Image 1 (cartoon, one colour):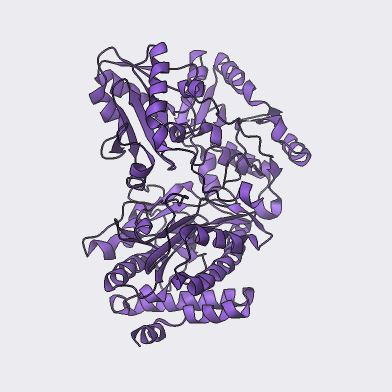
Image 2 (tube, rainbow, N blue to C red):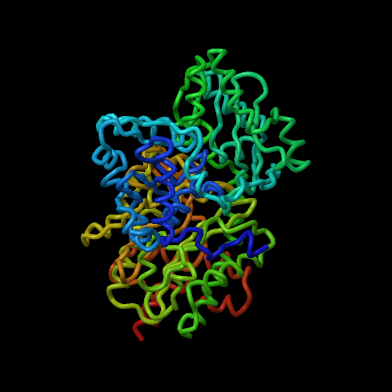
Length: 613
């Protein structure tokens, strides 16, 4: 069970294959009269975690990150990644085959417009791109005097001879004691947002799972049932999933709320809606262009906008919030056992990054409530900790030595999803490490203590996390926080704390609070807790206010804190947080771990005296 369901350290991609595989792709494109092809890191649902048969970008390039896109032309190829992966891509893909580009600073559309020649035909798979993405690529091709061409079958599939089959993970019911709302009630709420159209195509499997109170096992780390749904304004919904994935219980429960059909029937279904002249809502973020093209070529009208279920799902109900609290207590105890174990082993000189990952997963597996980890654990020692989304492999695995160790991990329980990062000093940290850690901590505390009016967006909160770093001319190249699901994806929208976070924060939303700092080649720092948006009553206040309830419970390493950089209110927050951690988790751990926890959560003044001595 552990080997198949939990983290593997075997890399699917290999940069040594890049030249041969790109060469094979170019030969395949030449047969079709194509000058190039776009290879996104995507499946038909635009998911972050995709099944093995959809890992085309990784197979072609070796790049294993969760976001990226390649463009392969006759005489050039480029691989585009964001700021999280600029270091990682150089170690996983062949720089002699691909140009490495920052996806924001030089978007693929700009590169395409420069590189394509007049009359060139650039191919794309319409199942793997949204209509908006297709429009952007078409405009880039037009700028070069070239054309964008949809392919009938993906050319990579023709050369990927050992491509895995599509997943058939079992679908199970998600019980009311965890969901907190019936399918019928959710459907009624969703329909109120569809008055301008005849129905909604549900292309995001997260929304499908949430609406019908089901969970699946088609991808690693996230309990997704890959499939589609159609929610009409009136009448019974239709769910398109492979019937082999349905257990007796899930089929019986689903059949009470919807018709069930095979995925192969979806295109014919959309075609018929088009022939009836229907106006159909598609999710702008996840709908494949292929489906909107099918609808519109037979006379229908595609209404592209955010799926209203996405926001409904993001606002957790009281049952889901109670489950999140319970999950974090359970997970906090496992994390504390790991931290206590790590404190006793770190300076031995024998511990490696993989040892730490396996140990943490072992502590989590001690709970029978654990279903899976929520993403591949990031465990970076020394310079590896400076790679924000580093994933340890057998090749990159390094010993844990004096300096900084960063571990970012999470778990899936039926009552909640967790995500926590702790940065740990191995031996005595340098003054620079303490300075940077404390500035990150100040940003973390600023978010945790924030009070703000309704309508405030994640972009406004994001600035609070960066202020202490900005004052020293520092910053970090990722968002401060992402939304988190309820036994669903650890990365959930639309809410996020980031410079681009435009969604107003609403009570019930869960987001991460994870500012960081990264000194390339030296060390990295990140402190992450999950927080839930809640209403706040301000004495003598004149307006309604919101704030954050911190859900995550685990010690923050006091050895890395420089008290002189904290003001009294920040120190009070840290002491109060640690007192809560100690009180909540002490009954859940053994005596030896409890003694370690007492020391790890002592008041900062006492910790400072101990460090100084």
